[in-house]
Image 1 (cartoon, rainbow, N blue to C red):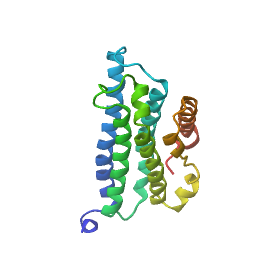
Image 2: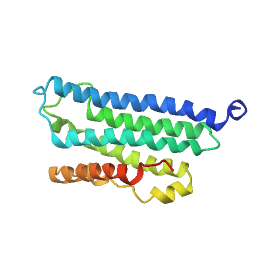
Image 3: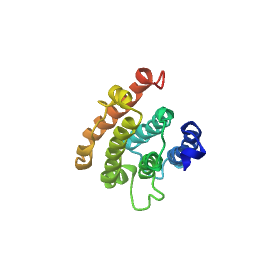
Length: 189
């Protein structure tokens, strides 16, 4: 019925608006958390790995918003594809919520909070990587052939509490994401 009412190019802006609202909530959550740190810097001890993941997830949100423009090429939209895109955006929002909880009363520091929730955080992060593979496939086989080999794994991060590992892992994730900008973001082909 939707195909009788509107073309794919008419539907796509609607999908981007809904997706943008969810991504906007994630960006707002991260920025509010950073603003809370600026407003009350001594309230909870900061943790560099946590702050680096905040930067990394913020970049993920920006990248997601940029890459989803590639969905304009989808000629047939079905509710399942729409639901998938919204679910992907919700997963990214949940990563943001795990970085800045509603309350820190049960924790002594951001480090304490981060390690107590690392299974959830890295489990969701792994899910976003899997969702990204599916999302890339949705944009077509040519798109997947161009980007399909760039998906890292983070299962080890769920199991490992070693701070050096987490510093190296988040540093690699940040460098990798920053490298997207000059390598891949000149166009949206």
